[in-house]
Length: 115
Image 1 (cartoon, helix red, strand yellow):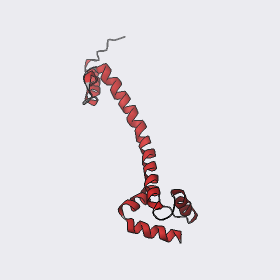
Image 2: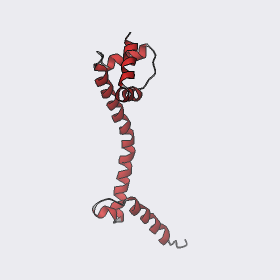
Image 3: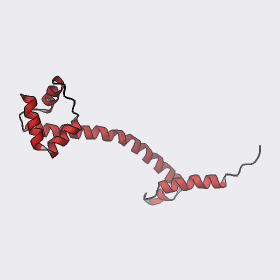
Image 4: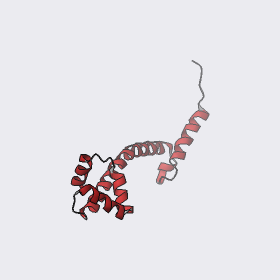
């Protein structure tokens, strides 16, 4: 088999990993083997946490809605039940945003669905 010299390819590959590890502490930022492990783990954590973020935000919206709705004599579960029965398709994000930013509108909305 012919001899293959990979000098430039290998250098480019290592530069790419070292560049991705920029800002890490200790030898993880400039030692290839450590930088490679650090960037691989960072990528795995980033992938996992992009999905976890959705869970965390939904839980936050539910908590905010529960706090907002309790002022009007309802619970979160009762609110969701009423919305399902009346076939109102507003998601939790929109409802919690309405409760935070437009309290008068939210109050009117709650009173209209309670009636």
